[in-house]
Length: 485
Image (cartoon, rainbow, N blue to C red; front, side, top):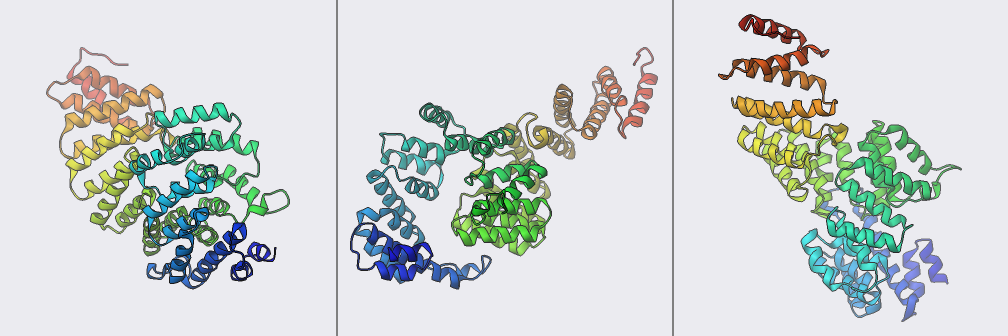
């Protein structure tokens, strides 16, 4: 009881000493775990603030090795052994230990979550899945949790699990996360709304929920959510010191333009949980906003050191080096981001922009076409994703004098804009004028189409309206037999 009391108040050295005489059972485990946490606490106390040089990152000490030797002989404590192996950089060995632990105790969800953090990519996941228990539903929960992509197998598993657990908020949250990862923010927001309506004080995934509200610029909703968790009689103040809540508050301060306060929250999240790695990436974004490029680069690099599969950190580095006009570096980091997130239009457009700045317009066109393959018709941020890609392609072809190709993409943009009746009016006006001029001056001289484009333009309240009227008069003079409305 004394050892447990010391552990509960985080006096880990005293807890390990109080429990050292216990040689088996939960007491043995708690004593060794307290010893591990005491080592970690001492290293954290010495390692400095979160943005200290990476040369001073937490070391894997001889004390860690001594503990690892003990845990390696205790099959009942494989999960702690895996944590130690992971801390020492023995990732594959840590995965093996977790697989062994899960096969012994498959209902320990903590082990599954640790395993998901250690697996790097879909290929490695495919090699690990066959080694896990096949009976029961835990492996199916893990598959959904680890995949987070709307693939047919994943969606099929979700539906199967929903039949078993129709009221599961965890499954609902996985559906929301899948929507979030493919940037279907409206769907993700709707699902999260229903989750937090059902469980008002739920902390899990509130960080992702706040990311969605941040990206959608829903200030009032994000403010209300932040106030709910920031403390007070009517709030979930007891969970204020959870990293997820710190992330929520960081997003709130960021959207309010208080970037220094946002950084404080992200640093607090890292102090509370050094494994909360997304805080590094979010901190990098804040330093970019503050134009502190050195700190931004350091934050993104720390994120990549911890998780080389974090495409947001690679993308952030690409953006930062682009701002610094170090385009070769920017190109490399954007290429890494596109490799990790090949279906994200933003990555390809950013890469195309760097190619364009380097004067490599052919590669810029090819990359922008790749972006067009992924663009969601009228459903991007603000509904303009594919519009932006079409306009960029038209611009790139026009810059190289390939006016026929440029006209083709301007026409696609016009057709789609008029179809949904909500394309960007300024860009639509420029495209209409471009196509009208193209039809007038091309050898084929399609005056009828030119007149149609100009007539549409004249009806719009845009700067190009007078140019359109002038061209219509010239058309009338060149072809007096024709009429126009």
